[in-house]
Each structure stands twice: as C-alpha cells, then as structure tokens.
Amino acid sequence: MPALFRAKITMPGFWVNSTLLSYAICRCTVAFVWFYQGLVPKLLNQHEDELAMTMAIGLSRSGAETMATIGGVLEIVISVAVLAYWRHRWPLLLTVAAMVGLLDFVALFQPVLLGAAFNPVTTNVAVMALSVVGLCLLP
Image 1: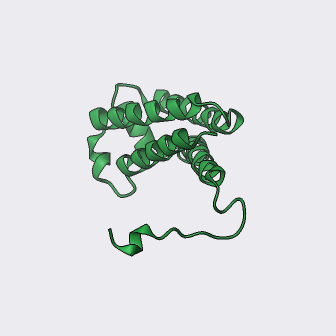
Image 2 (image 1 turned 90 degrees about the horizontal axis):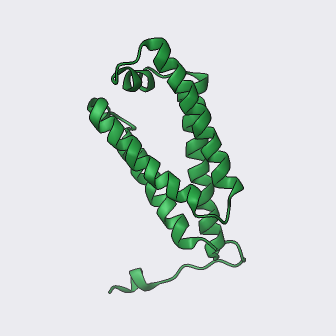
Image 3 (image 1 turned 135 degrees about the vertical axis):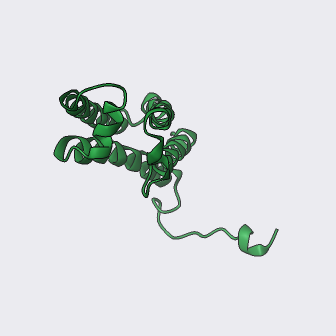
C-alpha cells in the first residue's frame, strides 16, 4: 500500500482525534437532516414534489397537505429523538429503516424523482451511511 494511504493525520486536542467527535458529527448531521426535511419542504413550504408523492397513492391535494404536515412533525420528532437519546441505538436504527422505506416509497410511487437533482437516492443513502457509522462509533 502506498505511504500516502498509511499516513495518519493527527492534530493536537482531544476532540479532533476522538471517535466521540466523529460520533457527534454523525449524530448531529442525521438529526439536522431529519429536522430540515421535516420543517422546510413539509411545514414551512409544502413542496410540490412532497405533495405529488402522497397524491400518487390516491390522496386529494388537501389530504396530501395534511399528510405532509403530519410527516413534517414526525420528522422533527425523530430529529429530537436522535439527539435526546444520544447513547441509544434505536434512533439510528429507525433512521436506517426509514431511509430504506422512504426510498422504496419514492421508487414505487414517484420514480421520476430518482433521477432529479438533489434526489432521494443521494440523500437517503448518505443518511443511512451516517447512521451506520454512528452505530459503529456509539460510545
């Protein structure tokens, strides 16, 4: 293996070189994504793509708006749980399961979104990966 890949970069300071910092970054990023996705495209500005996904299962526009509101609140609750239950595995396990389920939902009912810019594939896979890393680093 080339020396470039064997070199370990270290910096002085407890936080910089600790697995606790990596864990905190994973956990806080997962919480941020849940919070943002619940607040911005569902509660503050009900995005047309969000509504289209729900209307694709047969709901009316008002039903889709209600579901978006409920979904937004649930996502914010999960965000809070990811932070509040800092040393528990279940919020990260729930995140992994939810990302798989939500990606399957999009693939079944709005597959056109899978090829869009900033699509659910990249977001969901990244959040799943951060959750798995967080689970591996759980103190």
